[in-house]
Length: 287
Length: 352
Image 1: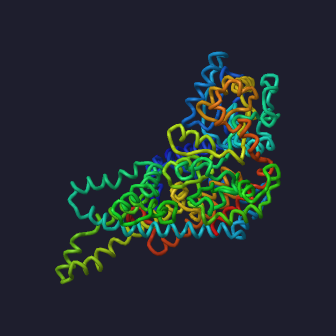
Image 2 (image 1 turned 30 degrees about the horizontal axis):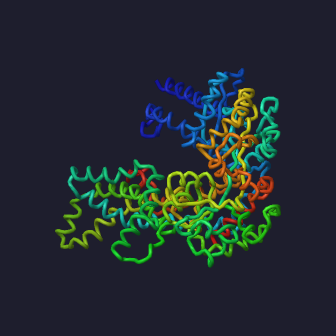
Image 3 (image 1 turned 135 degrees about the horizontal axis):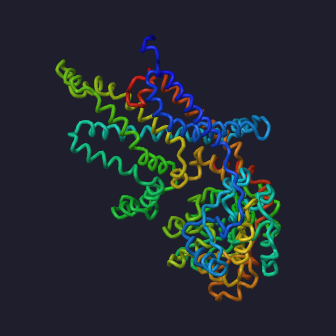
């Protein structure tokens, strides 16, 4: 008899069967296409590095990559600033009220990104609601240029991605042991100090998880920057779409996609090194 | 017990492998021509009009069922022809895609024993594609800002920000915009090609700072003009006619419109080739075309069309003889050759 402890996943073979459908799905619709994209980017039709060289030799692609990263970083930052207090409130209130508020957080998730983007166009336009209000209140004498700017892009994306910040924050905050806070206060720390020294550090895994989730989603954003942005608000996914649909350079589009994927992996690796990927799955240690 | 579990595992891996292999090879199903035709177009809001004007009467006349699919997607066409899994019989093709599809051999030759070539304008009756709809990139302006007659009447005047102060919008794409920039710089409409790209970008440099919005999707300029977000914009003519009918104070200047023609092609290996030819021939009939332009002013290439159209309706068509005389025609071959390089330069220019 072998030690059952050492049998690893084989000891849970029946559980493994449950994974088969989703693994098959991933293999066919994720692994195979990615391999195909990989080969597209290197074979055109014989082995070539020209697509990758083009990305690093023609200035515009690196500029757009940098721009994409900057926007994603800004969006994650503002999501955190706005999401943290909301998640805190949700975690502190009695469940009955939390449930109602939670629905308010989730409703936007069930609305199409396109619809929400158009809503921002209605709000921010020169003849839009916001400008009309400001003119009516005589705060401004000329309508402000709000739409078709980088600020509009960040604003729109923050609103769309906010739930992805709030949810992981909330789940981590909910799990914080409240006795620790009482312990801190009984030992003489005031509310501010208790928050800064005890609560905030304990909520950091949620901060990291929310930040990374929003950041990675923002990297691939397409329709919101295209509709709300000005001429300089080009994101990498817009270039990829242009290459696939208009110019039919699938090889080059594949190379651009893989560079984006690689950047995402690098960010995840850095995250894993300093925080741990298991934080993304709700704090359970992966062994 | 363990053996059994292991057997099961092997079986499951086999099944897994089978599934994987099957997924790599799309089905090859030879079939006789069925009594139907699959028509792929942009769909959307116009699909109902397509049915009413073309497909329903065709079904009634021939008994051949027309199945509509959408959207137009060259990548999908490519995949269909390359894998031999052809779902469409006919697909709409934007001009550049048409040239590309013909070069790559993705289309069947048009059967001119079925389609009446004599009634078609020459650029529409190609060996492998049929002109489907003319459309023009025109100058659209708000008549409250610029009363008719006191509006910019050429691209040079669109560029003249002193004489015509106002907020402007151009398309965030080199297509048609480079032509417009050259016309604004004084190039004659019939001397545009090959495009002098350097000169076009120099001309664009002059207007860049005055463009309030760079539009990206076709519905945008009409929306921008309606919302008074801009006073002047380039637009596809049909979008402007549409908002005019809804009462927007917007007018079209047809002078130096950039004339494009989208095509229909029969997909290589289409299962219902003959039905496809019959349906395309039916769509070109001038009486059908005359109905169609009531829904959308993108006429087909029938020469006898204007016999069936009222004078007011004729005037909103890019093929109206008066407008046609003043238009510049796009050279799709040039674009196919140069699109990639020009797009890269365009992106870099946008970021500057």
